[in-house]
Amino acid sequence: YAALNFGVRGAVGTALWATALMFPDWLFIAGVTSANAWVEIGNLFILNAVAIIVGQRVEREEQARLRAEAALRASEVTEARYRALFDEQHAPVLVTDGAGVVTEANAAATSLLGPDAPGRLLSDLVSTPVTAILAATVPRLPVGDRVFAPKARTLGVGSGQRLVQIVLVDVTDEERRAGEQRAYPRHPVTDQGGDRQGGRREGGERGGMPGG
Image 1 (cartoon, one colour):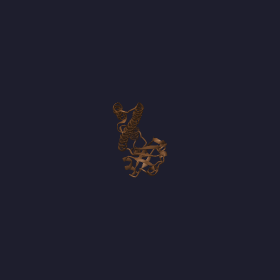
Image 2 (spheres, rainbow, N blue to C red; image 1 turned 135 degrees about the horizontal axis):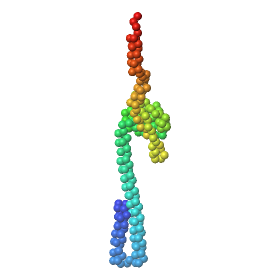
Image 3 (cartoon, one colour; image 1 turned 30 degrees about the horizontal axis):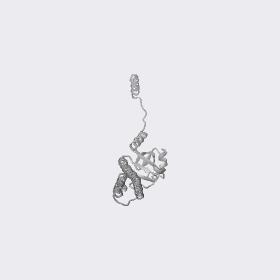
């Protein structure tokens, strides 16, 4: 009981206290033979040895439990920080498993793709498989009236599982400006100064001609 509740110190202290209480019985109670005394000493030795062993075992398990609880709290804090950063990202962020099923989506992603995005195939949401995005063969990804540049990277997790994080960078304005530049007509550049000089020469020649 002392070992389970107080560890090795409680177990050893209780065993020593029991040993101290046995000495008056040996000293003041008549009829105790030397053989009985050695039997009692052996029992007390076993009692103290068991107390030390059990107490140490219980204390090690208690320390392991405390370390596990501390690691769990640290993991929860890290998860909360990651979740806050994940949700506060302005760019849509998706996490898929190896099969391309969306497992997580931040607020920007659910606003873009709908609240039911987690649990669906990425190819059903953006008409592009996760393998193509991961291979960087999709430079631009149109979604509705917006255009995104997908950035993907692999996340290694335990048990050999592979996750893919995809960040959709909004390049709608950039693509719009590029389209306007391509559509802008290219006018030939004329030498206006040369045209003015040519006009003056032509006017002078006409002025110098005799009237008919």
